[in-house]
Length: 218
Ligand code: SAH
Image (tube, rainbow, N blue to C red; front, side, top):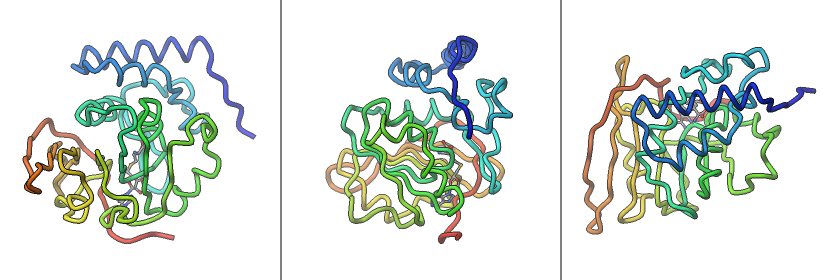
């Protein structure tokens, strides 16, 4: 059995990480507080214990990664989370991003297409602390029509295009944050769905994500 321990050293590393994120331009205190609260090392293999708070992505198996803290902070800040927001996340991966959103008070619906990664949630350490995260095995291109509409949608893999079904599942006035491009790096876009159903698009920095793939993988 894995032993989970959040020591003073971990807390110190985390505080330093928050300082780095602030230096890199993250200003939303709610986001920084959530990152300061959540022990990122719990989402990684114990071999990463000492480096879990470096501002970089790490492998979580199946060719997938836990996003870099700066990327998590950046996407979360763009989402402008309010307590009780209904948020759809595409790409559960390590559950770290979902946990940050849940800590900020959002109701999180997260979809993963890789069965092995989806199954990780069965041992999710914070299950009792964050019952506001609901896990789904499926294809993010389809979204979750039964639970739509959502206040916010976050895509944590590189999308080849903006999935039309996800736009449909966004509330009027809702926001979607999505890295788009099939090349080596993606432009972070924020889509606002206007009351008349049309969308407004804003472009931000370049990031590098693993690809958003179609279909499920058992
Ligand atoms: N949010 C994650 C980052 C995971 S990396 C975290 O905090 O750790 C991206 C994840 O998206 C991978 O787990 C990958 O399997 C998943 N993914 C890729 N395409 C997908 C799709 N169409 N639907 C659902 N998940 C997808």
